[in-house]
Length: 201
Image (cartoon, rainbow, N blue to C red; front, side, top):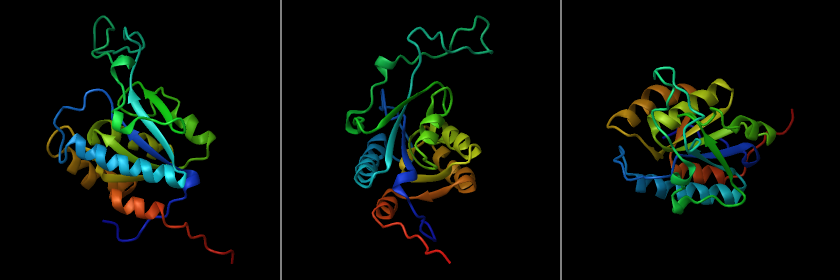
């Protein structure tokens, strides 16, 4: 998929696992949520093995929705409430103590979440993105990350969209402009390849 292989420095790289939580029963395209989870399990295992920081992103807000205000509703009531107790992670990708858990308040993971602070304080400048949905949470997070100057890698077979064509559109029109596209197997191979550092001239 890549003409030239990217390099990965585990000490400055984070794997973002986005929204593998709650009900994953809705149809996704071009692959099922089970397929996404299976690829993500392999990514997480490889990341932990080489020291890449694993960050689990979930959506959530106060149970009564008081922390969400929408200008397009007459009485400021939120259109949707995601109570944290209803947004448990898929048990197949349950966070470990060494992982970071971030709760976001909107589609993108940077919104009112503390994600950027967690990344900056650890010196993490490369983000590997995976999760659901390609055209919502992942794309919003990617756009925000790109604007903040992070290097982005998109794991194509560890994502899925919510409607036919959405995934393909992001990978053909958006992601190539702001980052690098790679498969899960290629990324795992790269993570296990020692980083080559050119000697000083």
